[in-house]
Image (cartoon, rainbow, N blue to C red; front, side, top):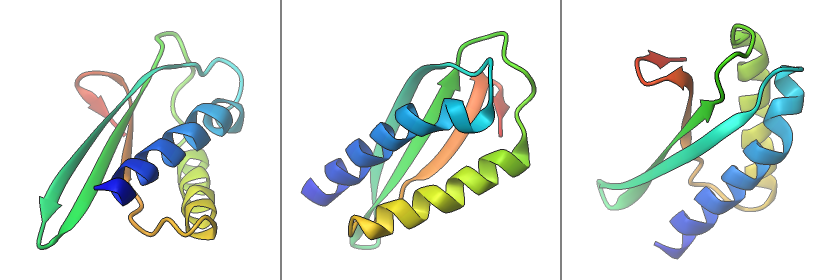
Length: 95
């Protein structure tokens, strides 16, 4: 579980620091939730990023580009249990 906690901690730090600037003006993170589940002898991590209301529409290409960079940065820090991340601004709107 120690590796799982580190993966979530480092991922959250990168998201908070870099994602709003990557998406452009008007994006502020409200909060981030994380969950770990045990699957077939390994932990699977899920994170949900909630944005504050009033931002422009989410750009799926910008998010995909950020995700690719996020995975590279985590691998560079020897974090191989990369969390699955969802980005939403309302409880019923998952991107």
